[in-house]
Length: 581
Image 1 (cartoon, rainbow, N blue to C red):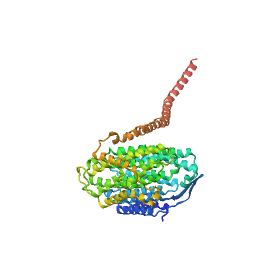
Image 2: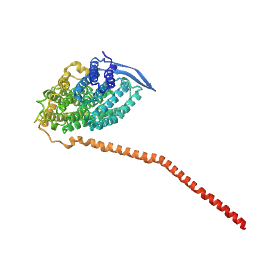
Image 3: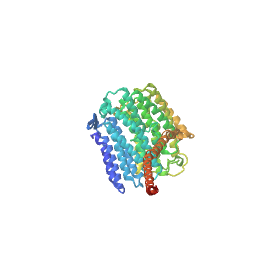
Image 4: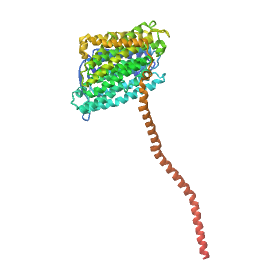
C-alpha cells in the first residue's frame, strides 16, 4: 500500500520535470504528463488508509504538522481525480496538437492535479491551504493559456481575484480554528472543544472560501467566463479539481459546522442550484451551458451537506466527476469538428459523429438524472436526504433544499434536452467528423462510469466506504421522474429565450456596479490623493524652496551693487556736507 503523503508527489514530480523541458520537447512533455497522471491514478488505487503526522513547524504556541489523513472517501475521491486527470492529459495531446506552448500546459495540468490530491489527503490545515492556493494559481495560468483569445487574460484575472476574495475568509477561518486548538492538525481541530460562537464564526469564514472555489452564489461569476480556457481544462476544473475542492473540504471539516452555518449553506445552495439551472436554459455557447450546469450541480452537493448528508454529497461529487468530464471532452470533440462553440451553428451531427453522440447522450442523461444512469442514483440520494434531513440545521432548510432540488430536476432535463436537440438533431447546418482516437477514446471510456457508477449504490463495500444507506425505491421516486419527463418534453419542443436567464439575472452587472466600480473609483481617488496630496506636498515644498532661493539669490546679486553705490553716495554726500559746514 502507498502512504498518503506520496500521492501528490507523483504528479508534482511530473510537473517539475515538465516545467524544465524546452518548448520544442513536445513528445517528452506528453510522455511525462501522461505517465505522471497514470502513476497518480495507480497510487490512488493502492492508497493506504491511515492518519499519520509528525511535527513540522512550531510557531509560538502553534504546531504545524506534516502528514496525511486518508480514509475510504478520500481514496474514492483521489481515484476520481486520477481518472479525470489521465483522461485530460491523453485528450490534450491531440486537442493541443498545434499549440506551441503545450509543454508548460501539460506541466501545469500535472501541478493542478498534485494540488487537488494534496487537498484530498492533507492531514493538516496548512497543508490543505497550500494545495488550495496552488490550485488557484494553476487555474489562473491555465484559463489564460490561449493568448490568441482576447478574453482569456481577463477571464484568468477575474477567476483569480474572485476566488481570492473568498480565500481571505478561508484563511481567517483556518486561523481561528488553529489558534483555538493550538494546532492545525485536522484530527486535533475536530476533537477540540470550541465555543459555539467560535465555530459559527470559523464556519462562516470557511464558507466564503467554499463559495469562491466552488462557484457558489454570490462568488459564482468567474466560472462561466473561465470557458475561455482550453476545453480539457474546463473538464478538469469542473469535474475533479477546483469546484469539487470546496464540497470536499466541507465534508472533511463537517463536525465544526453549526446549525446556523449549515442554514446559510442551505440558502446559498438553493439560490445557486436554481440560478445555475435557469441560466443554462438560455445559453447558445455549448461550454457555457455546461458551465452553468456545474454551478447548479455543485448546488445539489452543498444542499446535501446543508441537510446533514455528507455521503450523498460525495456520491454526487463522484458521479458528477464522471459525466461532467465526459460532457466537456465530448463538447471539445464537437467544437474541434465544427470550429464553433455556438449551438446555433450546429445541428444534425449524430450521423457524422456517432461515438460522440451516444457518449454525449449518456452524459446528458446522467446529468438530468435519467434512470438508471449514474446521476439518477446520486441525485435521488440528495432528494431523499433533503426529504429526511438529520443534520443540525433547522428543519426549514430540508424543505428548501428538497423543493429546489425537485425544481432543479425539471429545469436540468429542459436544458439537457435543448442541448442534445440543438447539437445532434434537426437540420444539419454543417458537417462534422469524429475526433482522432486520442480524443475519442477518453470520451467513450468516460461514458462507462457515467452510465454505471450509480449502480455501485447496490454494492455493500461502496456504500460502506461513503457511509451511504441502502438504496430504497419507493413511490416518491415517481415525482422526480415525472418532473424529468416534463422538463425534457418542454426542452425538446423549445422555449423562447428569457433575457434575465440569458444574462444570468444581471448579477455580473450588479457585482460590477456594487463592487468593481466603487473599488476602481476608490483606487483612482487614492492614486489622485497620493499624487496630488502626498507627492504634491513633498515635491511642491521642494520646488517652492528652490524658487525662493533663486529669487533671494537674484535679489542678492542685483541688490549688492545698488547698496554699494548708495553707501558710496552717502559717504560722498557726508564728506561734502563736512567741507561746506
